[in-house]
Length: 245
Image (cartoon, rainbow, N blue to C red; front, side, top):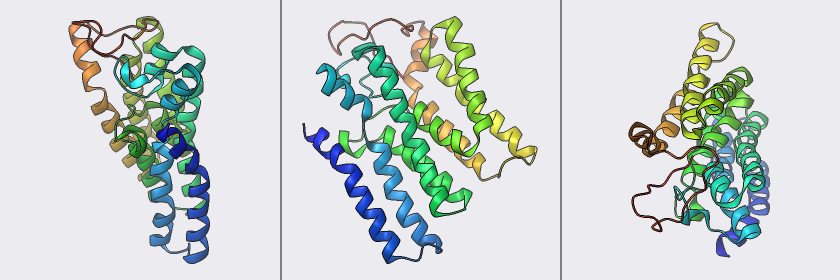
């Protein structure tokens, strides 16, 4: 209940913070731009939509199932497809809104990159859930779609190409990271995108890949669950390791 109340208070508190900073500081200055964007992006990313939706609608604490993560995959396995789709959209919107805010405040790719990475960090290590959240695929993709729509589209295509035949969400997610980074690199080399954006895909993809290290181990052992398999409650079945994205 405390997490729900805190999360509901976030939008008005962020609005007041943005208003105060906008009135008090000269937003043409770089330090003021970061002062406005950085905390808002992190707190926005920290809103645990998957956890909140499953708890409010189903009475399920997703942290007690599967991987213990709060992302789309674990919501799908523990609370159902409808809530998973909604969680996906809301998690995606965190990255989108953070980078859009940076675009409004500062016409500077570096500020956009900082906002996107802080939203990603908030999703993975949310202040509202003792710094344990998701893996960052949806939130990271949201920021990428604003900065480099072509790279974002290629990342989605990479995910689908791998996930649909294999039914491994984690494997598709990992493939999307390589698709995102390589396409971003190509855009920079072709002078179609600022080189600064490569920091976002490089750092962001590395963070998300690190968050999938347990999935990679289970894939190597052949123990990863496929799409459609429900999540078991943690500690309920011996020998059945957690899974999720």
